[in-house]
Length: 119
Image 1 (cartoon, one colour):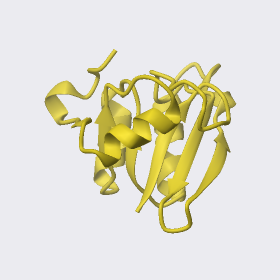
Image 2 (cartoon, one colour; image 1 turned 90 degrees about the vertical axis):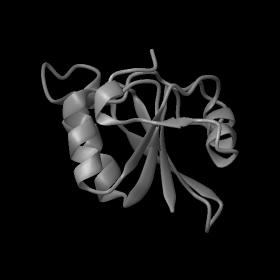
Image 3 (tube, helix red, strand yellow; image 1 turned 30 degrees about the vertical axis):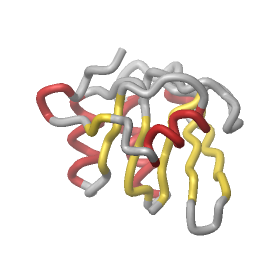
């Protein structure tokens, strides 16, 4: 089960980026291998439209099963849930702290009614 986390910098010590589509980095944690993969999402920062859908495709391409972020828009929400990816929002602190909160069951799973919540 790979877990994607939005980040401001390419490090587990980085702060969570509260924006899914416009986060500069997507960090993919693989608990089976206990390693991180870094995905540059900088083009999402300046995208006029579709940043969330582009970031969602990157997460789907990496075969993540969950995403941890601050907030997510409705289009990205639909793309991710259609691919079977669970979304956990409202994360705060560092990437590693968010991962620990997720593993402890402390993050709420997003639903269609609160897809843009958390910020």
